[in-house]
Image 1: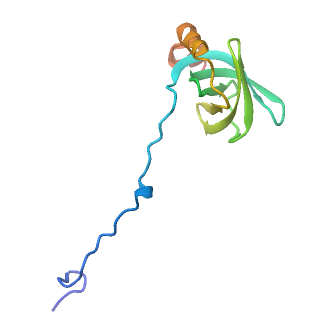
Image 2 (image 1 turned 135 degrees about the horizontal axis):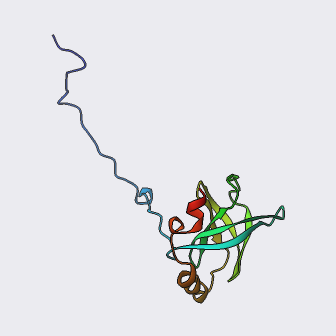
Image 3 (image 1 turned 90 degrees about the vertical axis):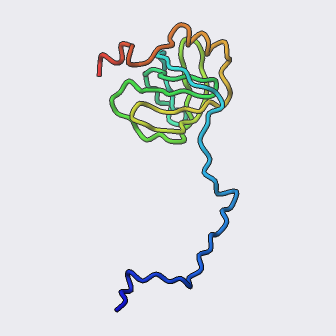
Length: 135
């Protein structure tokens, strides 16, 4: 007696469908490399005018990670913001909301000289800064 679960058919034709070239999974890559830093700054949410003290934890010419000083992170995805530090200010849009802060994409690139100065003066990991001691 044949069991339907164990029987294999030799007559079944297996046809592999070709994959569409547009269906390949693309990896995410940044245009500009990010640098670890700890720079005190302010993030202003433009639509509501609210300002939040915090620190930039990563910086690149095209964006940053801003960690709000408050322990609470609100879902502000896609909101327009102004990031202000002693070295620069830039408008951008929040593209990611994570536990470690907001991922902000700048509307225009930050000057490379400013990035180099930040890396030179403030370029270290948050785990090596005063912020790590308060958590």
